[in-house]
Image (cartoon, rainbow, N blue to C red; front, side, top):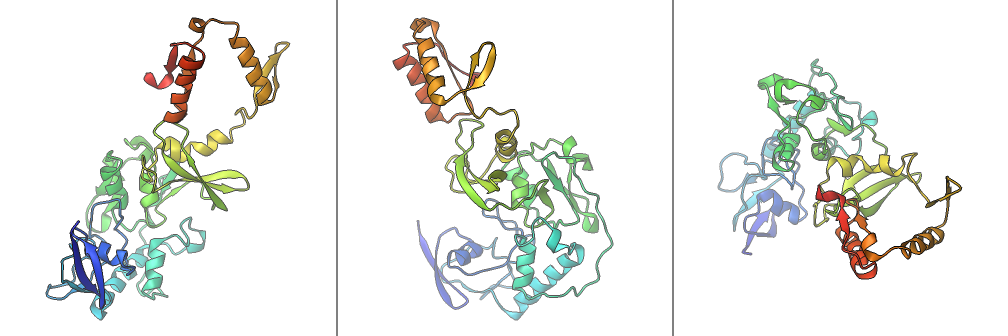
Length: 344
């Protein structure tokens, strides 16, 4: 791909043709604050925090929507730029709850990060008195519009990534908010509860019902279907307390469906889940070792002809595991009676 060279804050930066100024700066390790930008979404330029000065260009263009050009000279830290950024963040803070210590996004809040970067240590504007009711109708996450900064990430995620369009910007001016069709509860909308909006919310407006911080993470493959979505399980006290998609996952690129994001912990830790093989003795199931169970199955299978045996595979297994199952049925057991529940 064609390479271009531009200068950002006196530093020569090499970028790829088609990059925006923001992408070029980030590739060079130069921080430009932003709240509406997300690498998974189309440039938006709504928050106005990534404004910069570009020599030869009028005004303060947004870095996330301005294409980088060869020979361009960009300044990201000037009095005019920081004056605009500070004014924007001060207006957001005037509308934002300040209970940071009890917020699920504390220390992960991007508004908190930007305010610290700009050196805002007090609230210069009078707090507003507007209060939105909490929408806790969804079984997996809640929407608290009092924390919403109208960055539009959730709306764009639902439209561009989930392709559902369950939410959009509603009303105008001071009354604008993120809402469903008819401004109904989220549970009454066409929302699929995938949680993609939640993971891209930069503040605490959309958060999971359970927000325990994990001690460590374990990389694994989602067991709910054969797509092979890669994920990280958040672990605390040997229990799964959270799930996030792996951005490097080739089949999902960090995205998950409602089952993968919210169904793993309940399934793994369900009290009815079998954790050891069971063998029926005298009419009752008793725990057994894997060696006992497999030996019993092998002995039983010997009693049947190949055309009397069938293999049923699982949609919760990977493609590779299902391939091995059908190969075992055809090559080892000698049967073509192979089926799979996902064929429905």
